[in-house]
Length: 104
View 1 (cartoon, helix red, strand yellow):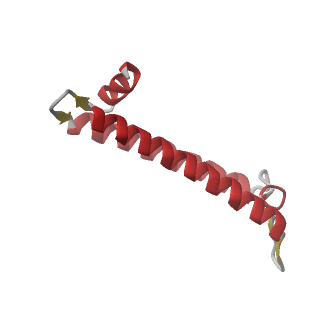
View 2: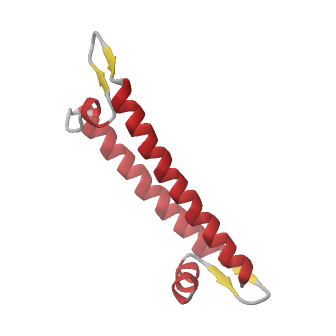
C-alpha cells in the first residue's frame, strides 16, 4: 500500500482517508513525460520497420512489399490473442488499483 501511495505522490496524486488531492502541475508533467516517451518509442519502431529491422511477417504474420501484402492468419491470430491477454492484464491492474483507492 505504501508503494502505491509513493507512486501516486510522484505523479501528483495524494490520497488520504477522506480526500484525494491532485497536484495538476505534477500530474501534467507526468503525462507529458509519458507522452514523450511513447511518441519516441513509436517513432523508433516506425523507423525500424521502415528500415527492415523489425520483421512484421515473423512477429505478427504480415509481410508488405511494393507489390504484395501477405497475411499469415495463424500468426496474426496468435499475435492478437497475445495482445488481447496483455490488454486484459493491464485492465485488471487498473481495476485492482481503483478497488484499492476505494478502500482508502
